[in-house]
Length: 208
Figure 1 (tube, rainbow, N blue to C red):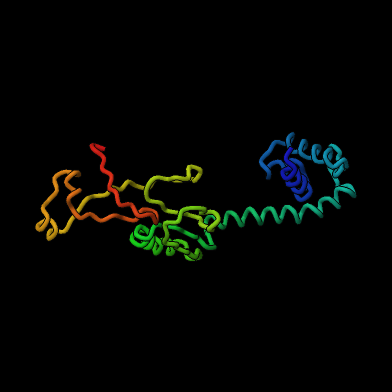
Figure 2 (figure 1 turned 135 degrees about the horizontal axis):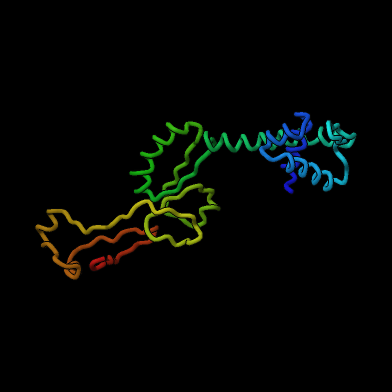
């Protein structure tokens, strides 16, 4: 049986003075309470309690064991409480990576609201397209635009986006308005940076 639970049951029996009260506190049956104590004694190879039909008392070994486990159980309880507190009131540093344009426009706005809700969290926003080795870079959270190459990452799709072809009125007046993608071959078009790589070609999907 679970050693930690057995220790908790044993400590409760000693503190409350009865198996029934300990069973109620730990939320188990009286039978299970007795079984936890027996299994604990069997695993230790020593009797911890002298038991009669009406009462029980600590053996010398049981008394020494009880003194040792109290500190252990206290530390476990404090550790569990620490986790609970951090879940409800997080503290520390949250490291976020985002593409520059997306981060500047969207994430920077959201940080203000986040800080109001969690004032004890410091936020480091790294505006970069370098999404390789996020763990090695110490990132807790990353925003990515486009296809996700690392299939091992735990990811959640937030939204969809699309690119549009546009031009200034002055350019269209001077060079004419293209009617199909093929017409663009005779126009001055700008390439774009995609994940730090220059992408001179434009890809069009028909009905998709």
